[in-house]
Image (cartoon, rainbow, N blue to C red):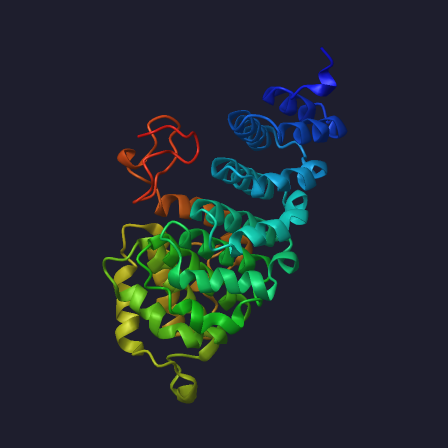
Length: 356
């Protein structure tokens, strides 16, 4: 039988990518477009695993891989979107050419919301290194507006993408501080964490811009039921704002923020004894900032403050913190592949397709 006229096996694709036979791999992908849906899904899933485990470049394949984002089968589109998340996270340069296609999926209100969520996540990872490619007015509008009405399982990915945009270019969102602060009371703590992170990143470059969000940030700090990492980020942002505005300096009372300084400072001092070190350190940082805005934060605290108010440190640690914030109970995992399953999801795992 002539192999050129047959649909290649899914494992043939990963072998070609491993061997860096990109032209042959591209031909293989083109033939897979006519294969059985299960074969297409398996091929894309195996390619994703390969990229995640070994990190081979798939940049030459991106134009062909984009076609699967508009596949007739929803499961194929979702698998393709997840593949682009992995590609963007491992090699953002390789995913740049897919930004328009990912943006179109994000903007399509008729698209399956899990697909849209993963496309937003992929765009975010690209934005870390290529903010200009992602932060178009249309894409930023889709990310921001979606915070108002999108599905609960999509909003955390939108917020995460906005955090990535900010980390890629800290001043890109500084004119949207008030709008983003409005969503700091979102029901999903991951949304609150990512948006608080956006505000901290903005504050690292333009701390005075945070004045517009001071009330919402104070509310996060004072909410005893709030996640400690969200409270910590809010405290960090308020500390940055205090140092910029001279809060607590009587000679500059005209620059004081609207918050009740003495009450808030007492709150920070109490939180210095928080069980979570992340919150305790940032409460200590903020308390010192309110007490002496012009002091050197590096010598004001008993602990190392090198990672507080530092964009590079936030970039290194934010994914790990987000994973801690969202760690599911065992009952919220797919029993077959371990994927975290969101509340209200269909009774079928979106990764492996198994019922549960």
